[in-house]
Image 1 (tube, rainbow, N blue to C red):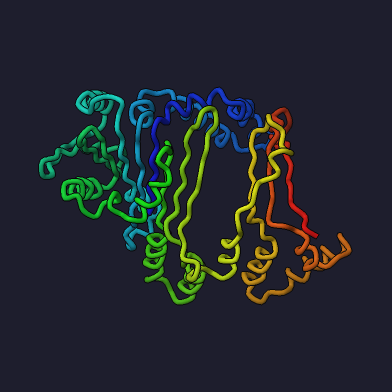
Image 2: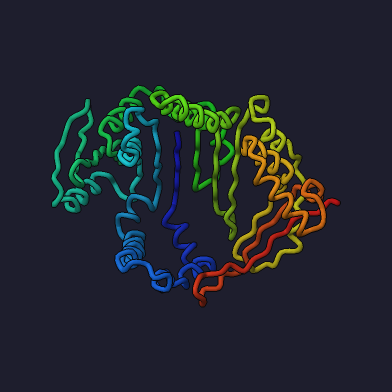
Length: 362
């Protein structure tokens, strides 16, 4: 369903720590905000614990060893029968693969010391020895090593399937033509995420099989909007002193929702707003797919004949602007910009200082 690959996360995190944006985030007193909002003391303690645990984790040898060099996190299809326990279902469908910084034989020794207080067992699967650690009641982590990689999962069968797939060289993601096509677009990417929309569509359809007719129809209307979408990929990499990212989506236009297909037909244009933007901003986003007329048509369709909120909105626009909503929508072009200049952290709630640009055509 989903695969996320990350290389050199430790190096990227070190770069982020000294960035201006990280400094702004570090200046936000989340505990003070929670106290001002009069949250329950237990909730405030939870916030403190999360911040402390996160700081300890990213500075720990475990983070540096398992996540600092190269790792992949995959989400495989869920069994339909597991819907009654979504958290357990998700955990049992996660597969983690890491290439540690050091030799896995050394890693196994460190692992045995690190987990000496956990109940451990070993099982044999073909030529591979699998180690299992009882993390908590009813939750076991299975770990295996192969050619310098460590594979871990809460579901023992996922580990066995992965090892069998590796040995047979068949039915792996590495042989998926759609994945290969998208991965070739991101040769330099340190972060790469692949999502199979058709696989998600099939998974969602399986979930609806045991629902009553009303629930099934409602969900079907939603997932039918995914028709036509194929593979989706996102990647990011560092180029000199700039972090670049890119997203690529494959689709079959003739299968798409007609309104969505209209948005996908927007032609590329030069971004002329860059000359208006300050150099020292925290964030900047530009798009030329700001199709407000299409958004409005989608909204009307989703209301399914409920005209009251539509008429109320049209009336409010008329009273506020003196013109009809339909006329107002035709004034907007397809370009829009959101920029973030700074975040004020001294007040009661952190407030972003930014701006919104929209292009007017009439």
